[in-house]
Image (cartoon, rainbow, N blue to C red; front, side):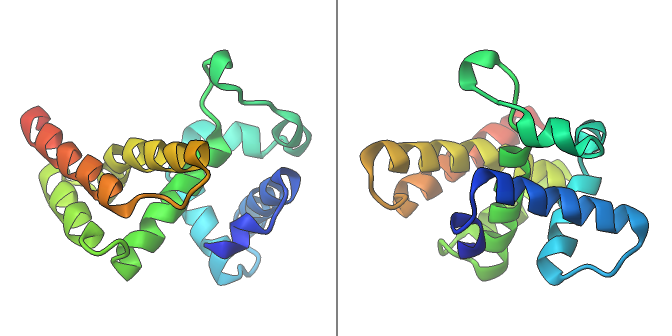
Length: 151
């Protein structure tokens, strides 16, 4: 999703806020805005934050603070949906389908996949290289095994 790579943190947050505002107002949405709004509707725990634009723009989400970054969380959902729709990396659509079947929910499957994606992206950033798709798929295969045991 190159669109997100071209934006500053503030611009990205403004995109989320505008998408949510427009969806709530019943205004027409561009395709990306509709995707963002759809993911936000699935996360009611973030609605109050997104309805307070100034607070949302100023909020800091540092790892040592122990608070999850809602924009990162929502963005990871969008990334996984894009990956599944294009089956890139190859095999991710199968993994998502297996998790969805096993967990009974598309959204629950994504939640199980988020950590593997986050870890893969963090590792790539640390190394200064593109994400390792093979390592990512291996992490996801482990998620399937764990999900099968926790059903």
